[in-house]
Length: 92
Image (cartoon, rainbow, N blue to C red; front, top):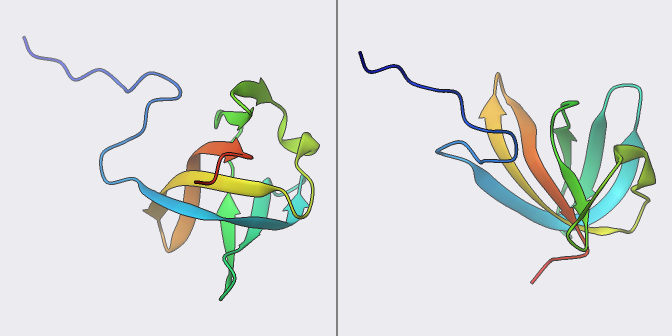
């Protein structure tokens, strides 16, 4: 029998996209970020199981601050952007 296993935590789903910019604001209650790309502001949902990294070390979402540089891997769900991985300080 060929059963499909769920992707391990931290592994990106097929079809994921990437967004790079600066944190404009962090909403801890709704677990979302507003990211400024220079031309527009984008809201990204950050689920509780989404890993957040600062220089390669896993951190809590609450440690993000406005003006942090971020790179976010995300998927689109119901017209929302849902983060799969957030990396702080690694925009190339």
